[in-house]
Length: 317
Ligand code: 3HC
Image (cartoon, rainbow, N blue to C red; front, side, top):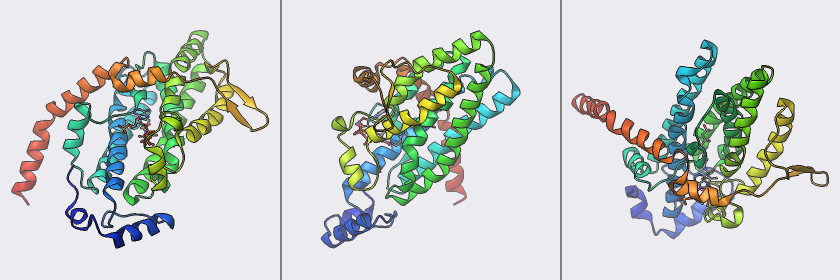
C-alpha cells in the first residue's frame, strides 16, 4: 500500500513526531489529515482491514441459515443481522481508505491469504442452535473486544466502532433470546443448544488473540492507543460476563476448570488449545477453504457491477 503523498513528504519531520506523540499522550484523536508515523498507519490498515474482512466473511456461517430459519420472524431478524455485518465491513473498509488503502487491493490480499480474518468464522454452523450461539458468544465476544475500540486513537476507526457496537448489542441480544426460547422447548432443542455451546465456546475465547506474551502487536498498538486493553484482559472480561449468562440459560460451558475465584471475583478457566488456534490461522480450520472460495466467487462474479458503476461514474463525472 502506498503512503499518502503528505506522509512521504513529511515522513522525517521530527516536529511532527513530537506533535503526534503529544496528541496520543493527551488521549486526543488522530484524524486523516494529521501527520502520523508510517508504522501507525500500517498497523491501523492491518487491524482495520482484517476487522473488515472478518465482518464480510462472518456473513457466511449465519447466511447459510437464512433459507432455513424456522419462522418469518427469525428469518427477518437473521436477515437484518447479516445485512448489518455487510455494513460493518463497509464502514471499516471506508476507514482504511482514509489511510490511503485501496479496498480492492485489500480484498485481493484477503483472498490470496496475505491478510487474515477472525479464526472464529472458520467453524461450521451445523444446526439452527448455532445461529443463537453465534449471536450470544461470538457477537458477545465482539462487543467485549470492540467497545474499547470506540476510544481508539484513530478518529475514523473509533467513530465506525460506535455505530458498529450499537448494532452488535442487538446481535448478541437476538442470539440469547433465540437460545432462551429453545431452552424452554423440547429436550431435543435443549440438547441442540448444549451441543452448539460445546463447539463454539473455546473458539470464541480464541477470538481475543494469542496470550499477551505471544502477541507481537499488542504493546505497540496499546502505546499508540489503537488497542486499549490486552488480549488476555478482554478475554477474561468476556469469561466473567458470560458465565452468569450461561447459568441463567441453563447450559454448561465445556470447561471443567471454570470456577469463580472468590478472592478476585474473576473466573479461572482451563488452557486454550493454541495449537488448534495456529492451525486455523494457517488455513487448517474446518471451513477455511470454503470461506475463501465463496469470497473469491463473489468478488469475481460481481466484478461486472463494479466495472459498470465505475464506467458510469467516470462518464458522468
Ligand atoms: N483470528 C485471526 N487472526 C488473529 C486472531 C484471530 N482470532 N487473533 C490474532 N490474530 C492474528 C493477528 O491479526 C496477528 O497477525 P497479523 O500481525 O498478521 O495481523 C497475530 O495473530 C498476532 O496477534 P496480535 O495479538 O499480535 O494482533 P493484534 O494486536 O492485532 O490483536 C485482535 C488481534 C485482538 C484481533 C485485534 O486485531 C483486534 O482487536 N481487532 C479488531 C477487532 C476484530 O478484528 N475482531 C474480529 C472479529 S469481527 C467480529 O467479531 C464480527 C462480529 O460481527 C461477530
